[in-house]
Length: 288
Figure 1 (cartoon, rainbow, N blue to C red):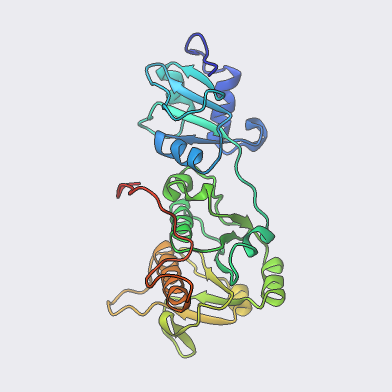
Figure 2: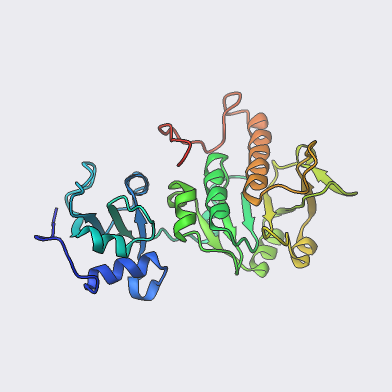
């Protein structure tokens, strides 16, 4: 593998600027590449078939043994490395990768009966990353993000997804495109709401085996009226405790689990209790 002869010590070096731009989400200056930091995310990208274009190492960091020899390695002094990455306690390894690109058609082809999670105006990157991770865990076809939702390539979203964003299709879609899916693919849109009012279905009472889209709204304001009007039905998670509502990512995860449970129970070709779309993977730490 190609390695720079000496650690770069200038913060204005072109490669350092590119890495910094990628961490800042500046697609123009990063050449369309995104930055990832840490051995875990690098390992997950490789496991997902995404080969990094360049790996940046702090001067005393060793390259991971599983890294292909064809990957370029650039060494930076510790100070320069810290100036380019986002975290306060850098792990000493970062990489530039080309993000996977998906279309709506790619998502719809993944399952005979699509299961979509639609993030409508989510602002918290940790919530979006967790939703993407839950989507992979519970066999969702993919995640749709509406305009105004935080980017799945935001650094906090990346870390919260724990690598699931490399494998779970995430596609931005407008209200018109989602309405078209509703009409052309017989998609039932369930609007997640926090209170069990008249006409609101409890999660276990809703049929989530059919082609399904679950709408999750903004953390503070919930779903905008336009989404509530578009929805086929409203759904809630019954809570015996005296809470007003659940965190957006928690609510999405519980609804995805319920959809997975229903689909598992009626799938005659699967073993009892199997989770659709589950991957065989090593255990991960609770903090990942």
